[in-house]
Amino acid sequence: MELIEINNLEKIYSDDEVKTPALNGVSFNIKKGEFVAIMGPSGSGKSTLLHILGLLDRPTGGKYIFNGKSIGEYSDDEAAHIRNKDMGFIFQTFNLLPRTTVLENVKLPLLYSDVPEEDWDKLALEAIESVGLSHRLNHESSQLSGGERQRVAIARALILKPDVIFADEPTGNLDSKSGQMVMEIIQSLNEEKGHTIILVTHETYTAEHAQRIIHILDGQVDSDRKVEHRHEAKNHFIK
Image (cartoon, rainbow, N blue to C red; front, top):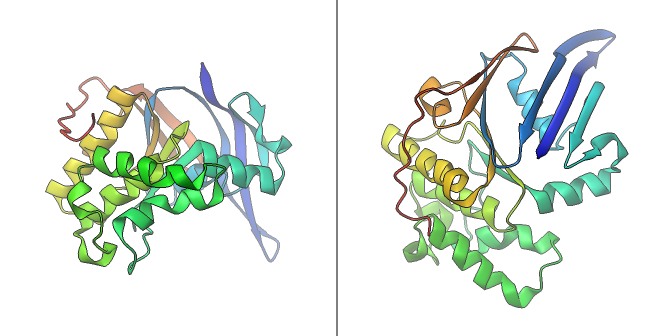
């Protein structure tokens, strides 16, 4: 089943009557349960594309259908609800509250959900266990390594069991060993838990954890190919 369908997507930024096209007729579909990497050089439009797919921005033209409904039909409030309930986000900069515990950071999305408060700790503990950080539960995020912080961000993205997880350069601030562990966790979430993953990266090695790579160049799809030799995930945390 198609989760995401985009057709002839356009995004034009206007500044003092100067129009700069960031996306120029992008089209592709992503099925539920797929792991897709979006690659491209700096300025290619891949981050703009991710922001539109994640309902953080609106396109100038074209069509974006998420879960069978055009995003043009959503009000800003409805888009925010979908973003919180059906989408999880992992960013390069982690976006954690520094003087707040791992447990409290992971529970943050629940503040804006309709999940009963008595269930919050249980859901958070499950998500934290799935990234192997149960022993860091009450540590503040400022006391963690970069790799551990990103694993907290993954747990936070998972807590509402979203339809899709967007990962924007998730290994960009990590050393190679931590980055590898993070990618194996993300790949395991796809292979073992069936999460749809959309990854933005400029690193070919990182992209090859995905099943498919869409390459963006000058605001257009330059290529869309299956990954022939996908890396093997060895995450020991996913239960």
